[in-house]
Amino acid sequence: MPKAAYFHIPFCVNICHYCDFNKVFLKGQPVMEYLACMDTEMERTIQKFPYEKMDTLFIGGGTPTALSAEQLDIFLAAVARHFPVSDVKEYTVEANPEQTTKEKLEVLKKHGVNRLSIGAQAFQPSLLKELGRTHHAGHVEQTVSEAKAIGIDNLSIDLMFGLPGQTMDMFKETIAAALALNVPHISSYSLQVEPKTIFYIRSQKGDLKLPPQELEAEMFEYLMTELERNGYHQYEISNFAKPGYESLHNLQYWDNNEYYGIGAGAHSYMNGVRRVNAGPLKKYMNLVQENGFPYTEENKLTEAERMEEELFMGLRKRKGISSRTFEARYGKPLCDVFGRQIEMLIDRGLLEKDGDWIRLTHSGILLGNEVFSEFISAV
Ligand code: SF4
Image (cartoon, rainbow, N blue to C red):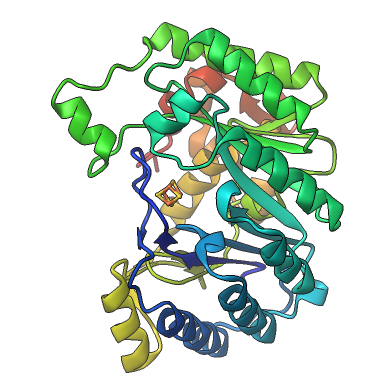
């Protein structure tokens, strides 16, 4: 039964050059009609797949803060009707710094939002321009200080590395700027050039110069060392938190638990079935208006698939996975199912055992995808 819900707001004011998320230009879109469809989807979903208690809510995108304060107010009131926020431990909204006004922050606060995930990415004007971002460092500082001032202090900053034109000194400067914000959570991902993005088109033309792999690895090493040195625990490969500020919502994914996914292109996992909602706005709205459910894919997981997911999601966490928890969930000892793969990865120095726990070593963190691929189609 889900204890987490994700809501997708697909509107963006501009399109970033690296982005392959499900999103559309805000201008001219039927925003209110879309929000009404999300309201319907929430109602129908909960009727069909009821929950007992919701622990986390997460509004992402696209850009939730691209909505006006009034639209946010209407949408968050709809969320609260279906998911009473008094029970919720963590309620996150993704915030783009240049659109997060004081008025919008007040609306978020009023509806019980207690965490912001702020897309900073980098602190150099040249890199932000290269990424197609329209904010500047001052916007990030302003959002952080205004959020803290109204009592939302569970703040996360997103950073990127391995960017075109990014030097080691620039990345060091970015980390220093992020640390100076004194926020309790930092996420940092390396750039992936995904199909159908501006960066992809440029790379096909040979017009995208990325830092060499060794430099990207050096940046990742620096990130891990510098954040640990400043009191941030690396609780997942790309996520660092001060004690008590780990993202409870994302931990639901890595713990392989069920969750609702509401909105265009959202994914969900309910009653052992993974579903994907229609991505294009019009198709999503038509499906919801016709029958309340916008699914375009439904995949009932086999036990083997669930066990494989348990491994490659769970091993993303620094504490790893517990053999006892695995056996309690699946009724089989972990070593009976994945013993061969685990021993081989231990021999290669990529996994380690610590009592009941199996986790990535330092080398395993650097080669995470190689480790996870060993568990795909392994049963
Ligand atoms: S990165 Fe975020 S703001 Fe930029 S286009 Fe993608 S969803 Fe929109």
